[in-house]
Image 1 (tube, one colour):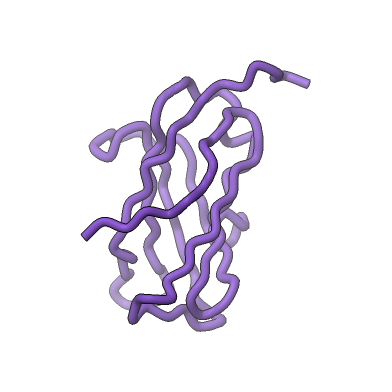
Image 2 (cartoon, rainbow, N blue to C red):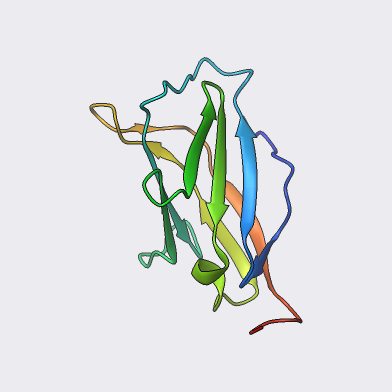
Length: 115
């Protein structure tokens, strides 16, 4: 099954955020839940271009059904025009729990950059 989340493309060098709501899912996020997300240029690539975590505010629990993902401008500053791929894993459970989705987000270089 495929679900589409509406959001903006990643403009390299500028902050990007998306809010993901799982209202139609059985998944819930307790207040102490922690998460990690690795961003790659291709799902099969070995190199990680950014890591989002609860600790670095890259993955933020909003409520029991909602997460915010954030990529800072510093993280994406040198990304070329391509596509970024990411997913999210809950890390406060044993074993860790993959949330069962992948995001594919277009990346473009900004015309205004380096300011």
